Length: 277
Ligand code: URA
Image (tube, rainbow, N blue to C red):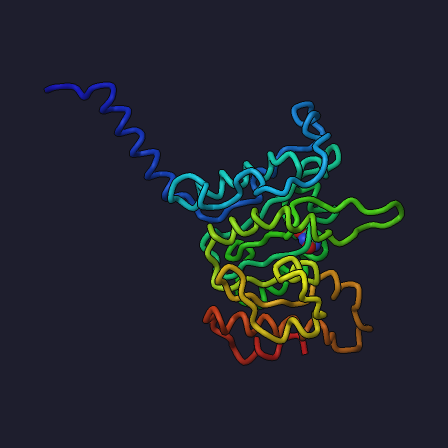
């Protein structure tokens, strides 16, 4: 019997590897956050001045290799975690934060920017706001691993002395938007849900300065994807009513999420309709 050539063996192995990769779970993220900032390798990049106006590091998903979602997402994630501008805003020992979740998710949550816990973990929404977001996701009958979660900004905005957090600037959001667009293009969700003022204003035309009160009343569209705006979980945490009082803000967010559930055709039980009253 004739033995296969070295090339034939290599080709067969390559086919096996490709097949194995196709079987990989499409949930991505938490395992393996990005590198810590401040390592010698990025010392030179730290001096990166301001925001370049051209498209950052070819964020466009059209420029990403291959047709496989996971490979394109991996490549985009590597670009973001290695982005010199993003890294120039991260202090030593902290991380640039990229999106996590299911690459086939129907629902794409987008927050504002990583907070203190997130820049340590390298994952969006892992602190108190994340716990509340998880509660809403669970109420929808979903697991966190069934949705995709990202932020408008890939780094925690440096706050003025004495302040804990500050909202991202328009310039910062405009710089990161191509990275977000590429994530949306890879995941192809049925709905984007923006959390908080910064997130919705980052998506909308800068001339649209309507308050959240108005913006959450209608469906918007971004890159052809239906988009619903709601309050940020941290806004709910800061405005919690007395324990004996109903949490009206929480109910409002829930009503927004019920509309999202209807849009993506998730089943809604009568009990679910009544949650958080
Ligand atoms: N707030 C956000 O907007 N995003 C996070 O990832 C955490 C808190």
